[in-house]
Figure 1 (tube, protein in one colour):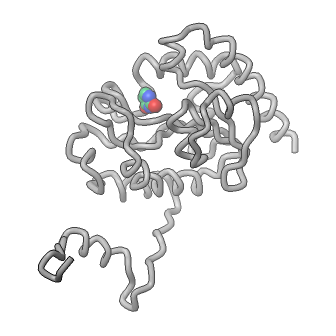
Figure 2 (cartoon, helix red, strand yellow; figure 1 turned 60 degrees about the vertical axis):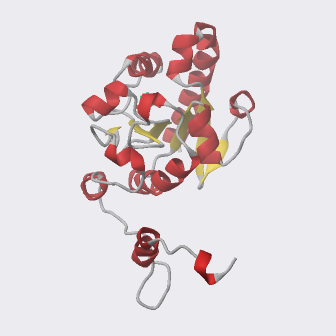
Length: 217
Ligand code: URA
């Protein structure tokens, strides 16, 4: 390739400049004192194309001091319209799952891998997840949950950086940045395949037992 073939992308160069300090070192991501402060700083995000198709940025909902953090995939239509995670049919089922282990939304925190809805509810793409992940990591840092539970394959695989099937990730405790990490089916999968209900019930018993064990420590 000759020099005439080199394409200079000014948008990419501006993005690289924003990531570097004056002496060329990579800037540290800013740290926030509260979820509210973090949300208000990032809620106008346009880092990926989903920013321009969303109705609302869906940051997360629940108790900022929760010991239990649930992480879903991405906002769907209802979530995009209302600005909160899990408010559609899958969300109503999630509320019932929580109630089955004596939790309400006020006891836990609920967030997603992506903060903006992928058009037509398609699967999140790897670059979208990569760009959105620092937001979730900051949420985890601020909340400092004692347990994280991934809802569904996409969330579990993205967080664990694996392609292992969901069935092999369930029913055991993993470690996510030092935090006990658990995986279960996405509530939307339960709506499609009610036969998974028994498995989720068993998962929730394991989750609750660990929660109670950590609360006693
Ligand atoms: N599915 C998700 O993964 N997250 C939501 O917020 C809604 C549906």
